Length: 343
Image (cartoon, rainbow, N blue to C red; front, side):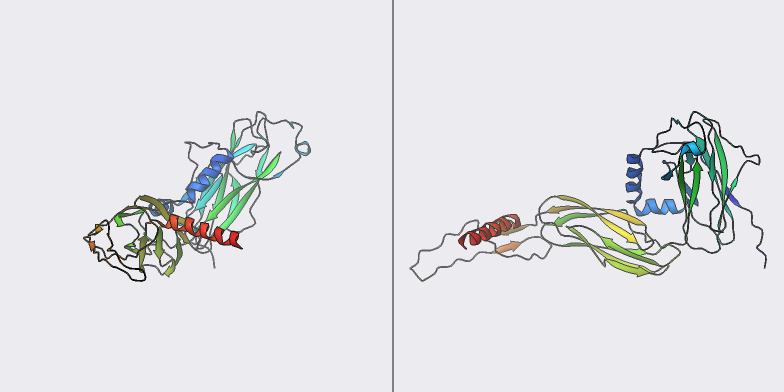
């Protein structure tokens, strides 16, 4: 059996922002942002066959420069590699078995003296790295870059992971490469709004979601009060649909903001913005004060009042000694403290 010759799909680096350098705080901020995408943003990302980032590559080992060069002084901070990789991480999607995908990687010398750099061949047979130039140079001049070509030939449509190990005269850093296979996605809306929700009552909204991906999907939904969802977890085959019930239970008359987070079993997470406006219903009593008739000791008198519900909602009610739940909690705490003092 011989593998058929396939024309490789080559994607080069973008010259715009090619060597943009970011601090650790900025990288952490971008990681936090990427971990909270909406469904539409995630769907837009998955349509890009090859993507990459340009933050500072992570250093995994610091080497003794004196073993490799006599120029042991560098203008590049020790927290950053001497060579800036572009892209510094690679994500490959929409690949086919036995078809080669190629990505161009540039390594730029950020120091003020010529330096050496090398990318070690990956152990995986699906990944291969070659110098783009047919005449390799022992050193790279300051401000100049050397180019490598990463070739990826998958055997099947599944997830592949590889860390390209790069050596300079001072450190060893990595370029993470991720090839993502088929994924299952649900077409959740980006936001959900509960308008004119009655206070201290549950308002429901039902959303029909469908697995629009190309693989079975397992997911879970989490949120914080006053927002909840049911079911909290489920599995859907490709093209299968499910009704998800979102609820809003406000305790006070206010404008509430929150989010629903949807976590997929493949590691991706998206969120839905949840907002709700709570209001009082048109419920009243026919009298604001009751004047009880005089009576004798051990006997009682009584009065009748009416509770009138003029809204379209069914209202559950009960009589409380205190006006709010917070006052009840404070009263219980005072009562508990009084009991402890009595003992």
